[in-house]
Image (cartoon, rainbow, N blue to C red; front, side, top):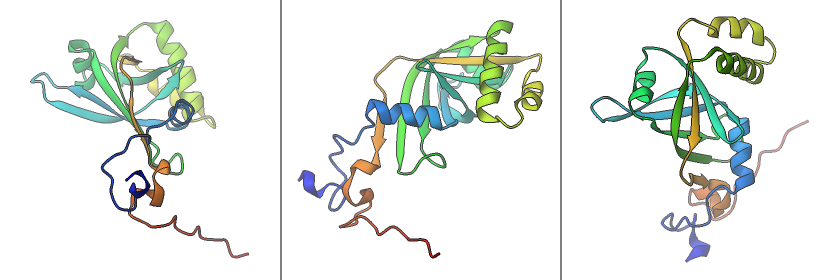
Length: 174
């Protein structure tokens, strides 16, 4: 049955997770994620946020008063979901459950703004940093807590879309 994965079924996906190296590549290359949290009434919701991955942790920023900041203060349990869309070839994803720490100190903010703006906008970090360095800015540090859920569609024959063979790659006409 395993030989049929991707061409006849998508039921048994064992072995299609991201290995440690592929996960690290995804998290250090991609810069956008879904940040999932619970509202005051317990309903799960999320926002799309930019992030950096440093020393095994997600680092993000927001402004006091926003729903996700209030939620993080109320319940530290969050999930961060990252896909390879727009950043890497092949369909890959990882969902990481963790606990968020909301930093409001100047030292963390200064460190974060330097790292964040230089990574996400290396051709003009100072202008963006000036915009982000606002009076009510906070920094989220998400510390992973559980084994991540991941998927690497490149490991599925037929690209996981029922093709009997890999599609031919288009060639450049010179």
